[in-house]
Image 1 (spheres, rainbow over the protein chains, first blue to last red):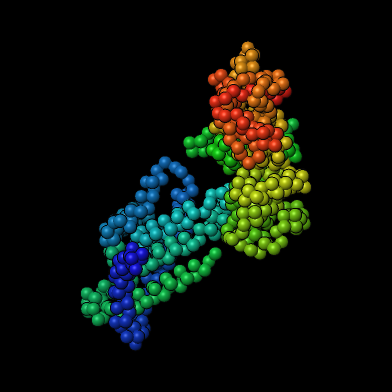
Image 2: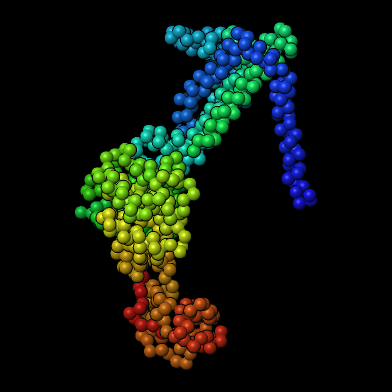
Length: 256
Length: 327
């Protein structure tokens, strides 16, 4: 036993943290009987808010994938003046309070010139799904960009160089070598962003109270009707999120 | 007209600079770039492949390819760690170039390479868990499948078990002939260079120090720096030979004769003191002080009775004019 005291000590401390992270979720799941959960899921406003949350978070992730991947690749592959500053800019949204982020988005995309510009294309951000999407994206795109950046850094630059000598253009090298070899980290980054987007409340509630995302619905029910009415919705949301999360992560781990 | 001509090529990679690299490579030549680690050998290869922005001129068959994109240059590149694509199978790795450009007689070339390099059993495997030798053969096959005009090999033997190096050197030479290649091979190992090279360029600190036929460069280094790099021993001023010159000379430790009693019959003879005698497997290493200089002498055990002389005692050494190499 003396030989393993340090490992035992680590396991003990780690177990405390693990318990802290899982106990509330576990209690939430077993604290509601399956019949109640099923009934809750069948309620129109619950199912539509969960569907809305998952769908919009997915759209935000897809948009960030298209625009964030090139940024991640640039940062990972090129040395340039201001690279550290750029990395800090990408990290800033996760450091600021979410309600403050909501206010900032409201100021930028609300009724100002940017808001008017998007209005020309019929795109409004207050009280719309687009508003939910920008709130989610602002606070969670960092996870995708940083995940992809680390993934690209792990791809040996020599692979890309050899591919160029074998006749592939830079775009083809990116598609055939860089992207496939960084895909695990990219998918993990997407998953982190999507998952983070599901839980976004502070910024969303400032831009869009209706239509309600699941976190806003849970808050609304909690403040209006109390714990017993909001807890099943929270439990359903947690169960569904974990199921999607585990499925994607399992599939991702199976990827070569 | 040379096949490939580097004319005052310069390149900056981070803090490293290549300075006015100039040499020509003939068609069908096996050209070795020899130098220490960090001398700039790989940067030269990458510059030829178009992977760095360069100054100066790079001509291929008289055509300026200085600013040509890497994918248009028709070079095959084999890196030290082979850089195989982990997301592709062995077969897909080898046929990679076929996705992006037309390969003449692709199938017969593929079959020939697989046959010549003994890759048949590996074709459907992933590249994880392959041995260094297998990875090397796949990387070479991948480069050759693109039908390169020039094959660039970056330290191809350094990741290979030393036991197999001789066999692989033989194989590289055979491959060079079989596919009528023009090969540029980078190494820090001058034994490897002496076996493979038709011509050699010695590169140090981002500069070419000497270029020429392999025998000429390896036996007649143009400077002290090159001589030391090539492992030349006993480098002294020729005034020691009674010549009125500041020129340096070197004498091979194996070409020095020793005698305990009197001067050996040689063009140059010296009396000195034995500093040390070390018995190594099949020979003795003798360190003999002559005036202010210390000579290093190698004597085969079968040709000598052993170190009968004690340290500090008088010893005679000698060598002939034909063995003296002036730097």
